[in-house]
Length: 432
Image 1 (cartoon, rainbow, N blue to C red):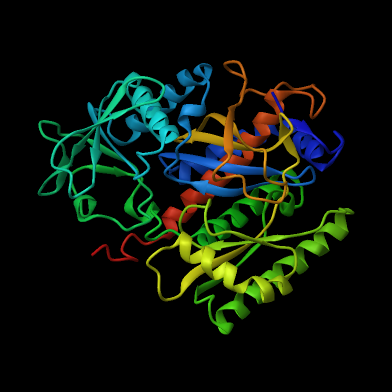
Image 2 (image 1 turned 120 degrees about the horizontal axis):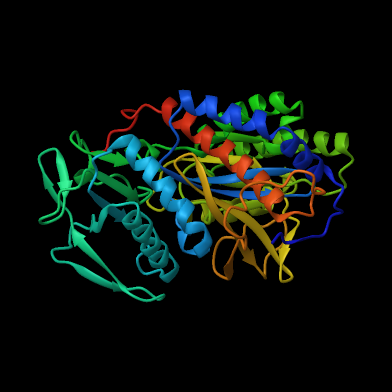
């Protein structure tokens, strides 16, 4: 189903939907040619925001969770995509070592890891879980809320290979975003595939780099469809390494916020949009659910400077010196599920959309981040095969059509991530 939209069903999003449907053969050919030249990330999830007049990605996760929110009907597609991804890198693969992140206390996360194990089991792999915790000296059994258990085993490093006791994998799949750095155990692995690569982690990765690449992708795509790229592209500015607790650091954020807001106001005037523009200030690396501040006017920093510094430090603990800051155009969400604000999240494996879900928050507004305590998740209730659009159906009236459009924009973000990984030198950061 598609959530209730409080805007009319004749707005720009439906015009975009119509254009996307009419251009479907050209779009799919364009993606096919792009994937001939670029390698997609192993798996990806993309948070989208639908403002009624604009549809854009606001976060791209290369170590995604949330696979537990996929409906059973979506699993066969996920298994097929996993098979395709594994066959490309290690056709003879028999064993897969999956390394979860540090959120093993989170019941939703454990459900997601269990679902990943199920997907790769059905893709023909023996899957075991490893922990990078240097203090782990024996297997740890975790109870999964949905039923069953997961066993985390200490990893064993032998020269250029990483495995477990009596388990030698061809491929190591990280679900740890390396926000705290890359442990020595996974550095300099020369005999195995490590996916995603180390430079996909937040030790190296930057959101500003990603959205710079997304802007390039959006312009190419918009040219293909003969449309304004702003309709699918969130504007942004960045400050590099700054200390926001100092006047100089705050001045940079204020300047970037004012510049982005000025551009957005100009676009709102061009399209006759009567909403109040806003920007989101956040760290240039790390998880998006923390350290964010919404500004409707750069002058608001005069009263919120200390609050911003506190939030950014909380999102990047241990950073005493400057940290990277990105100022991103805020995109409203007009989608609601059960009277609560909602936003779609699209999940992909290799270059394929395998499903998605809605992130819902009853206590937050349309211009606020929906991650964090109080959020809930609703699977996209589509029957199997509904990723295929239905030509001829009125825009806004067909769930498969709306979801197809979501999938197109999410794939643009995934393509931008592939550009980003290619442009990022794996040796740009030392892991010592």
